[in-house]
Image (cartoon, rainbow, N blue to C red; front, top):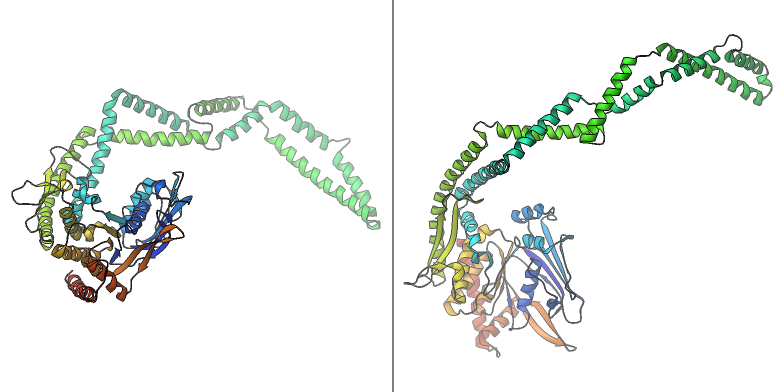
Length: 567
């Protein structure tokens, strides 16, 4: 539901802020006052093509913002999620800036998006119907989805099963096409992966192995230097004639004898003691190293070969041992996938054929269920058309089973046909010429589909043009019925439609300081009487017109109560 709309410097609108409620809201006013400009603003927020011509003269940019409540619209949340966005506690804020230099900035909940993303999200929130453009109902490619939504669980459950099977079929078919496109390349890739996995697996690499082996090689390669240094150092510290440890011990004893006489002496004595014990530890460490030292020429050769193998693998598969291990795991997964594909119970070709056969069976079941739904839909539409004084109009659903053609939504094509007059041929809905007839047909369809469309707000832009009398009242009733399921904003010049609305705004135009501006006023109950009287009488509003207007509002309230009670 559209809750708030804010417009700045757009066409002849300087600044405008509107709050909308649920059910049906009528926008009335003289021709040229700016009613359609408000709808244009909502259309741009929903992602329609923008233009710098919309920027108010003298301004650098036009700013549009619309706040929608999408709490009860899971379709919006799903589409937003596909773009990495989420409603903010059920609210969706669409904003758009149009600059005079042609620059265009779109945002959803404060996040920058492109126009295509804005349109994808906006289509789930707003459905705008004009005199000559009825959006999805006029596009045959949407008719199958509308039929399925009308049918509900009997068709949608089958469709879900079909789509799951279709995804599996597509995966298998893609693998088969890839294999058939280049059998030689497939075989070569299989052989190469087998070799790579065997080579890396047989190496049995450990993550820190190269560092450890390099250290061991350096020790083995420098054995003589290490042996000489360790032995020489130990001999010096353990010398029989001039033992450094004994000399330091003597110095320590001398200083300890006078340590109590001066703090400096005590510090020196402490340092000598520390040095003595430290050298003792060093002497012990040297002794252990000398005892552990051994020469193994065969081990050096083993380490050299192992390091050479690691170096070869790193040149092939990565810059480090870990890179080689990671590549090996990746190759294992790909090899397992290709092996599983080749070793299927019936082979890849058999699996594709099996999946296709199952899909065709599901497609036939889906077609039969859709046939039943098409009959029910036709009956429901005829009932709505009769209420709109089009009892002789024939609505039909052309459901055609496609031969050996598998689509993501089944094996059917669907298009709505209309026969407006007896004796004439039925024509596709999109080719109906009469604006008045098309508006009524569209309203009949929208009455049926309002509950399943999932659109938050529906906008009718003068769809009542070209009708009057009882047809006008019938149209007003239908719009009110639609508003029972979705918020409806309706631009109208018909008093019957305005009277059936739950809320009414008056759009006027005035000139201030040489500039034309549009103003919007929410009408009180009393003001509504005057506005509907103006729509009835024209320029001069008489007492009789006021009484007639009041009567229309009273009757409209009674009619709405009956319609909604039976809904």
